[in-house]
Length: 235
Length: 302
Image (cartoon, rainbow over the protein chains, first blue to last red):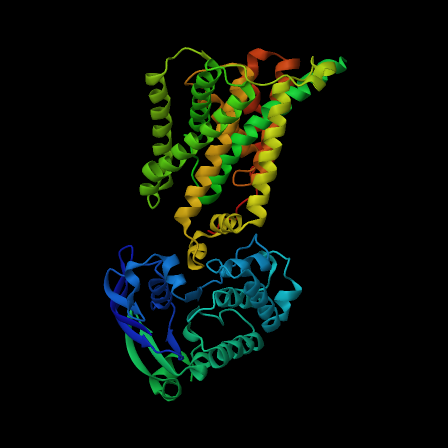
């Protein structure tokens, strides 16, 4: 479904991604784990078209994303809940969700989908008319994922959904991710520092170090891998 | 105290405030979206006035009904100024979007000079008289010493524009996209919002408002030249800063504060200082509220 082939992305003069290749198949949950600064977010921004790779290709169902604008990429069915959640602080929760469906025109179905999100995360429903900036970190994470789901994505990109959250909330968020994948057939590409949680729900995983992919295996095997355990699981 | 005189100054202050508001909105909107002070914005008001003058003169010489002439002149002025506004962004600002903010600012000053001289070249440096197209409202007869038909028309047009604009920004999809873009343009792109379209639309609306202001005030004052955009542009900019640059409600509030201060200042102190009051009030307010009346002070991470 998504195929990244040998991309090099630069941040100014910094060579952030040094020839990354990976693949995500329809229906999978894939995680990309790595330390701070390894290039995880850059990988996601490259897919979404906000950071264009200098060389290499990214194809989605055969279409070359590196030539498309960010809005065209969203239109193909790739949405992202980015690093830092990036909730619009001065828009209400409802408005944030409505903007998630910006490229859709089926008003009635959008309304139903918003109700669906309120069902997933009841706290969002209770606070629907509050400004996004007033939410707690966990609530913002729920909102950023719901907002990304509003586009009915084929591929959902999640950047560190567990960052800074209490363990019980992390569990809740990961359960929802799994549920979206199981019941609604949404393919998930997950970037995480919290390798343990991420690998548990993943079909396969990639380990990223200093802009290079150093290891890839099934989620299960990576959890057992000595190197991964030492570097990312704190064992 | 002479109540009549006070009332007259109050009403004329509201007129000034209305015109400033129509222009200040453009400054604050553009700043909100691309963080640029569009110094060429005042020239769009001037272009609107000139387009209005040309169309209105042609129509009134041909003996067409003045009200119809005014409406057509305003519409054509809106189209013309908007086209300029959008084109200016594409030509002078878009290529500089990724460079330092100062570059775009200098480009804006350049555009402003270019447009002034462009009009100077094709028109003249003399004041040209604007045909009187505003009908006399009969119901204003008892109060005609305080309130002219032109003023009433300016209030009505400004109010209608502000209502329409508020609905647009608050409730429509485009308005939500504009607010989202001004808060976080990268996130807006990740949701499929085309920021190029949002920016063009922002320039279009801002220029349209300036053109309406240009035609209205010119038909009230009765004469225009190539330089009128400069001083009014600066004043409207002051109004936008006064209210809190980036805040739409702030721009409107700042405009009315400024209009009233100028009107009372010239009426009670001296009209020699007309242009001074704007800057005095700016300094006073920014001393106590550095972010402006409705502006939010930005927390900077160090």
